[in-house]
Length: 389
Image (cartoon, rainbow, N blue to C red; front, side, top):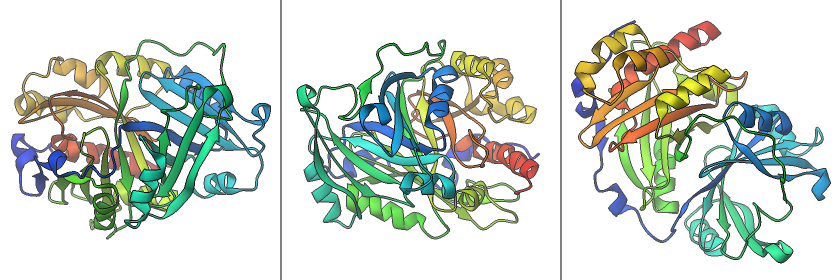
């Protein structure tokens, strides 16, 4: 294992930060927030149990046979401002079953909360977005009307536009409220979705950077090339796109040429398409949260002792003793705006595809560039154990 990169890593050639990104983002498509993320999974009930018992999400709504839905079951799970929808097929036929058969469990929809689903659809499709769901009004009776539309992005992932201003139900028409949910795990802080990372094929990163710029009005916040994100064996390139209010941030990764297979290529080999690699969840107590999650059985990537030997000199005081960071496997990084603490889970299913990140920010709007080398070496250890490096 080689040493981690030094104090100057965040500013070395190859890492380009656009400080004007938020101002440059266009306002023709106001996105208020990420409304929810929907996963298509092999067993929605068991997935809901996983998120309730291990991650502390509360089931708030359900759709399925009991609500008149004949082809799928969906569980809406919520913790603070994070909403996940877990959807599974009720038969071996149809798009959900085919999606899971091909990709395994994975993200199908990163949905945006908007003021006008019809205008959002019109503005994006006229700029080249491929339609996924034509604008529709869903009548919820006394709960009002929910308006929705959707377009596709990389792979089979879509972005729904959700307009809730005239809807007052628990989630959407066709769902019923879970009146007496089973107790969720407690003791962790998970507040909101910080960012969602997409993996695309070699040569496709700029295509989707242009897509988010031209179709959604995003601007490029950061560009990392393979001079920054590399080890002795593999590399990748990444560009981070953001909307104008900074509430939606999408890093887009593609593999780069290396001596061995990169983590991005491993994802593509097992997901069989471009897709969402991970979702980062923001916390204000990463130490307590990770300690609790570890105690419940969540597996995180480990970092070598050498990383922590140099950490204090590289990042200074981050409010947590280095010994505690090493005990829990938490990484730290600092830039001119502040610092952040972060950690990554191992893949949460058998295929080495989707995982979660937990991140605590103190001023920094970056993504932990100073950790990339050590992190990638830790990932390569996992890849080697799977025989995929």
